[in-house]
Image (cartoon, rainbow, N blue to C red):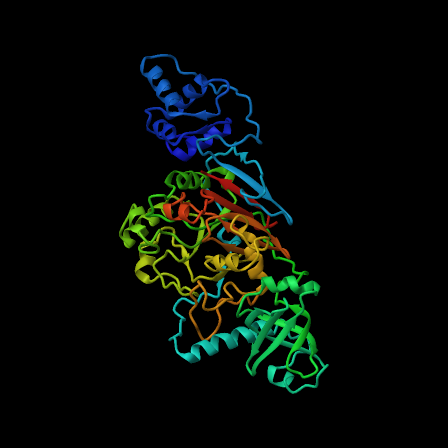
Length: 529
């Protein structure tokens, strides 16, 4: 097989246990006889070398030009230990998890594993084996006008849909009926959290609201479930059960329930061994866009090691955008928003053309900031036309070969992390914040906070059905784990640390690509930085 293609050169080198600098691969590809040059390079490498560098290629080219014999065979070299740390040149590495294990490069301390033995391939997949369906795409369906009725409509829809998951667990009564019940009665209510405040004696007062009014519930500080109060957000749907005070003016909480994912949830899996790559936050147009890492990723997608990767899901922020934060223009490599998308489309062309691609927008993209975010307009869709990607709204559910993936960019994670205790939600373990959203069955429950939300006739942000995979981005941190058998993945980013991130102490996990086996829901994280 000819070696002119850089991806094939990388494959050949890795099959022999070597990584390579990108410039070295470029020089090999441009040689008059790439195969002969590669053989000469490998022959002359020091015994302890793990990386083919540019100077190695230059030396081989000089030897060839001087007429020195070129070896005809492929010399044998000792295999590289698969558990060695990644070399500093940014070669591919991975960490993996199965079952209930959670993963994060900042938290789990897992050593990266060097990949090798890959070969360049061309996928020949029977299209009949593939299936991809979209649910919840509200592009073109927005009806919100900002009128009072819109707000009433979206909250009533939220209460009705999430409340239906709770009413079978308690003998609920509307707020207006509870007010007229006798003191000492056992009562239960399903409602939206309208207010949370502490009392002078250290107890907690939770006000629930339904379509008939509001009613106060007192959580005593010495009860074992008082810790749940720290996990509450305003506007989420909750059920409370307890006893009315003698004057019927307040209820003492005995238990509380979230809509939650049932502990008996069994995820669906694909009927064959097929994989999906989950990435987000590419940020083309930024001076910190990691072009070399992206090139390594797309090269890898052409190799035998990635032959089962047939789907690519991108969870928002394709470009850096313009005017997203103060002085952003000083950190832009491309200042025109349309040119940013044109550059992103060129990057998309590097992906194998036989992959199915699904994309949702993020807060840096050229769509409205308020969620749900409709998919891109026609002009941007025409620009991002490489490989005919499916472009849908944020959030949307993508079902690939029976496995449902809830794609949400993840802006509300900032709010969850800010509001909840650190052990329940933090940036180093973003999947824990995702667990909270799964528990609440809503991707952005708190209205009026930092997350901009648009009132619609229905609440598109409700998790009506339990997904098999929950995929987010936005916070630029890699983390993954399982919550009640739902695989939660925050996929990191492709942008090195910006000055703005330095100012807020964010150290991004950049150049990672989580790969999910859809037949087992196990995760392998490939590293390209």
